[in-house]
Image (cartoon, rainbow, N blue to C red):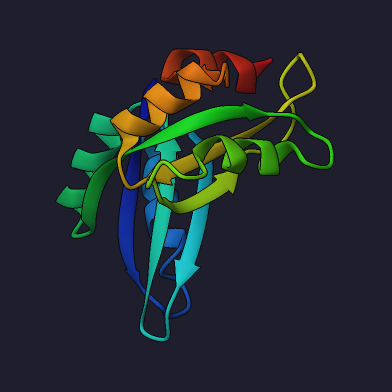
Length: 147
């Protein structure tokens, strides 16, 4: 299952990160998880929110460049080798992990949740399914994060 993620392009200067976060907060849009990557001049704020379409419209109306991409949330054993097992499953498939980041906390089963952006999300889903690696969809992600 794929999850929609927002990528918000920001200038790399003080206050740039707080502006979109304040807008989302004011609109009652919850940020489920986020990641921030930067270069010298700009940053990319990656967000998973409960209402992607509403958040995208709001941010764009306020002058932010926003792109929607698909990521895959995976349950990963929270122990040494958990991430390696996921990567081993993809070894030799030609599927690239473009980036990944984690969500805080654990699932009820004690697993960690990681979000992955793959070069070919559909092929990655197929491989993961064949290897019995559990993916988590948007609704399930929201339930798990709320406990």
